[in-house]
Image: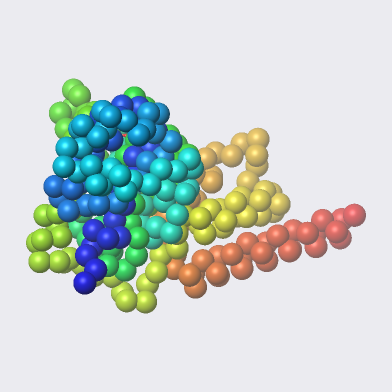
Length: 249
Ligand code: SAH
């Protein structure tokens, strides 16, 4: 039988302290999670990581190390980014409980990534813009930044509770397959070109148009058919713009 944890990956981006990587492996294993992905860790493998992992050294040994953030989230139908601070162009925000319920509801049908940022600077804007939702652990207003592995522990605990809580209250339609980041990225890149071609997007004054459109489509979570339609619209825009400019010449 497949377990929800089989399709959940914990992604640590640019971790500085190897001890945090080991402590994350332990935080995961005690809650039944096993798939750890490390994006460009500063110091790994490391004796300190192994020591902090304790009996979760098997999770550590199986961790996947990648250079590129897109490789870490490739194929994921749901990407949640965790953040200690709220952003200027806010994305929809979940608390850990709501996030865990959503993950457990969807993990049976597609791959899910839970992404954690750097100790000093968290996730950058480029990484955040691939997330369907951001997750914030409510804290004191005076100090909102948890230790990385402790943040992982809280999310892993909520996932465990949601998973053993008799399954999801919410289920996803059986034929719904949200598109992974790499396919959305292809659409976003062409959309930007097309919007420029039809003079809707002025590169001199972008007014965060692409960021807002990304947010819209990430919230809508198009399936394959819907994304095909959107890509078709972009192709028609590009074609029309090309014909128009040929007529002018
Ligand atoms: N100064 C950084 C803090 C990074 S803490 C910042 O402003 O983002 C390292 C990581 O731990 C964060 O990127 C996030 O993944 C996680 N984390 C820490 N505190 C959190 C909180 N209150 N809610 C959600 N994630 C948190």
